[in-house]
Length: 439
Image (cartoon, rainbow, N blue to C red; front, top):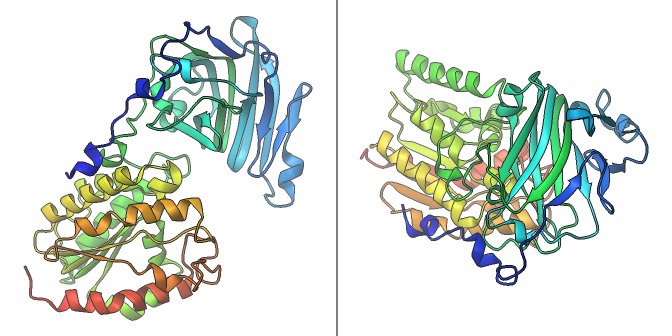
């Protein structure tokens, strides 16, 4: 692997020149039966937040017009050993939560060896998931997903959760003036209770968390609340699809590998696919929500085994940047690891690596800029023999760099017109690679 990923190093102490010589901090208790003075408790909905002023707060009024059947409710409840707690109940919603916010907290003293600890009781989570967010400055939050552990904790009563603050800290994060220090976020449907939330200067973590420096290159399934029911079945379906094609003498000559944008060839792009790629017995290996580590898991678990395509098209990375805000070098490192795996498993296949597609409506949108920074690193991964790089992004954009909703209605996923643009822009290079003699 190139030096780009290795050069990223986490040194929390180096972020703390001012705090390094400060007096030992006391624990910062945000909620201990009741919120500490100055801390506000609120329930989070997709577009709104509602302050808890009495015994309960219901976000249903703000949801009914747009999300019929969805509900979010936060109530005061009884916690462990008779203390006060907060119970969040949500139903059929992509974002809910209970947030603790305040005027401004300096969390830097808690970073070197500190922990975030709280009591948690999972009443129902078989159709949902939770994650924990910690503020790291203005417009900055880092999170730890807890979908599978949360489901395993269902019905087991109160548990004390202790997470290292290193789970939430990356190089360059400030943590000096945090107004939104903690959020428990829920997706899907579920009910959990939380109590006794505090940051401590020490403590022994009892729950692991992914290493942000290596997660993009560590093979893993997609463990989101909305993906666990279909992701592995789709993987098995794709294995069978390829096996059946080979058995019929139609071994795929063209393979597309990626996330929901690639999966869209089976939906919005189906007609364009039929027109351009069906003649190559093409295979679409796109999985909504996938990040580089999820593609790596699929490759290591058989998705290209037993086939020998002429060309594989790889488009991945927008969920690394969008979901975790991975640093450009981290995402590029994950893409490079996918290329290495493909070259090993498909030794006679040429790989067309595409630049991550544009997102955000405006050219200066934060996710657009982040994707552009990743894309700037990708040409160096092409060798002109096995791997070829292509950037078709300008084909989607207006002259001023804006991304029209007529091509990508949500400024991320192409519609049928967008897939036609993609195919047209890529076709000359794809035709050239398909016509080359086999390696």
